[in-house]
Amino acid sequence: MEPLLNFIDGTFVPAEGGETLNTVNPATGEVITTLPRSKASDVNAATRAALNAAPAWSATTMDERIRWLDTIAQALEDDAETVARLESMDTGKPIGLARNVDAARSVANFRFFASHGRQHTEPTFADHGAVNHVHRSPVGCVGLITPWNLPLYLLTWKVAPALLMGNTIVAKPSELTPMTANHLASVMQRIGFPKGVFNLVHGLGPEVGQAIVEHPEIRGISFTGGTSTGRIVAASAAPMFKKMSLELGGKNATVVLEDAPLDDIMDGLVRASFTNSGQVCLCGSRILVHASLYETFKHRFIRAVEHLIVGDPSLESTTMGSVISKAHQEKVESYIRLAREEGGRILTGGVANEAPVEHVSPEGAFLRPTVIEGLSHTSRTATEEIFGPVVTLHVFHDDDEAVMMANATEYGLAGSVWCNDGERGHALAQRLDTGIVWVNTWLNRDLRTPFGGVKQSGVGREGGAWSLNFFSEVTNICVQDP
Ligand code: TXE
Image 1 (cartoon, rainbow, N blue to C red):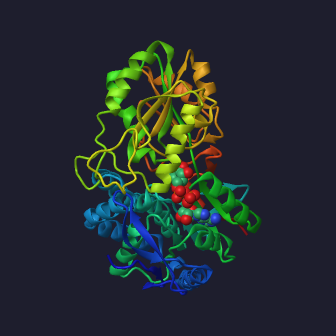
Image 2 (cartoon, rainbow, N blue to C red):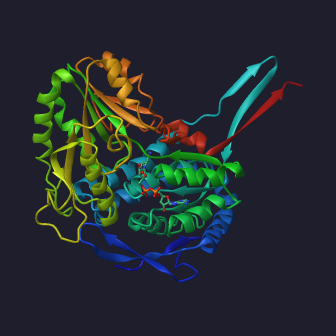
């Protein structure tokens, strides 16, 4: 495939230094193409383009920006199959998942914020002869830094509201998954989107991401990635008083109460555990089950997990592909070994040479879904983010114990509660120290709702009005009658 390039001021250009990186198909180990290994000078060029484009772009009306979002959505929808194929090749996720989740949601992100923009109003507050007008204006040039697990889905989740509120953008996708970000840039160029409003700079996090965070003219940072990286981002951005939204790691609990209708929820529990090979920050990696149900649950869950079709992600029949890289496979395998050291029992799956995946390339980064029981809920395996196809099972005896176990990690992103009584599930969900909880469902997303976590899962919320507020500055103007 053609080498990927940066997209600066409406033009595709190589890194100024001419260096490149390879992007690999993790299911085959083959190099797909190269991407620029950009440096701070490339970030400076992109930021200059964004600043030059800002006056005209921020002077557009909300309606004009809404029309652009709808145009981008339509162009992405027309390219949906291409997007799905690129995303599957770049990430190792099954083509069906890339089509139904990544490509579809990328279109939905633009359509949603276009419709949300139509409902946007600026509130006024009248009191003692004065009227207060709350005006929103662009933050300015914003930096968007995104991870490799849902590349276009998470990039567009930030690009759409940032554009809607009149900002210009310097975006950096993960160096592991640059393909669909480039496709978005090619869509922007094809539709004649104003030059310099959306800029894309590829490269390594410490070289490009860090330069974006440190650039004095980039006034807001929306970051999605690991907690350790988020800590580095925050350390650079906070002293510069930049607006920051940090969507970080998770170690989410799936709580199965004693009255849960197992037959009805088993598919949901498997989805919550192993979607995208467990590489979704919202996946439930710890399953807490009431003692009365545990043995029955365990056998039915293992049987359902072993029905997952793990294999070549380009096949429509595959339901679980590879993980993102050989290096990540080794990280996940190190946790499977750690689980054994901590007293865990592997009920299904295991490291690749114990539980090989058939009919795939030996160079592919494949792991079977792995379920482990017998670990303390405070073990490292059960409290550290693995971010792969590994879940641990734990037993509780009453709701208080379930809440205590669920809250016993440094993370607080999401969770799910499964039971026969929604009200009881809702009440228990309110006791979970997380930003998001699903009751009898999972990844059921209403884009108007706040998305984000607490503790080591991040700072801030995105979604609906929360995104519009993050990607704008607010000014209150109080007008006194003369
Ligand atoms: O993150 P990394 P990854 C989390 C998930 C997991 C991680 C996996 O829990 O922990 O993301 O994604 C760039 N300054 N979430 O491994 O390594 C890097 O190049 C600036 C949570 O990609 O943190 C990449 O573009 N940038 C999330 C991006 O940061 C730097 C949902 C993320 O890289 C940098 C999805 C630096 N010093 C995944 N170093 C949620 N909570 O919603 C690296 N980068």
